Length: 134
Ligand SMILES: [Zn+2]
Ligand SMILES: [Zn+2]
Image (tube, rainbow, N blue to C red; front, side, top):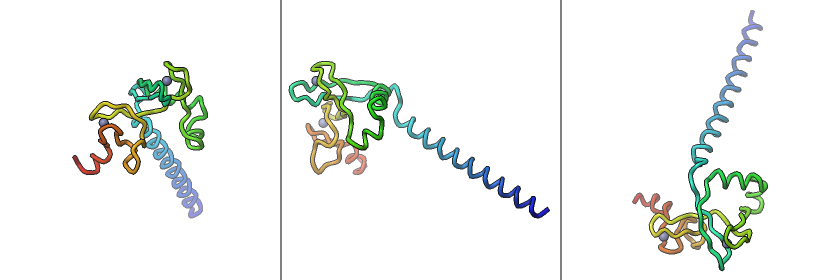
């Protein structure tokens, strides 16, 4: 009798563990998809100084490009893979940000010693503004 009870308890614990793992996986997956809507647009910019072409693509297009060029592992190992610029045909297009204050499209991290979302044109940083509570 007692042996059976122990076995039952072990099975219950095992099922609970599997269920918990499932919930964690589900939550992690759900969180990552919610943060980047596949249809939301992101800004990209050509790093060629003679070109500087700026345009928008969907987050899905960007993810698809990254996944077909080594995926997140490649990204971590050697940084973002450049996309081909539709204007100058150089492989020099990277993900950029658009300043919500002055509308400048810039690469994150261009202003030294400031948060990487600091605009090099007007100095506005959404993260610094959020930290200040304004
Ligand atoms: Zn270009
Ligand atoms: Zn700005």
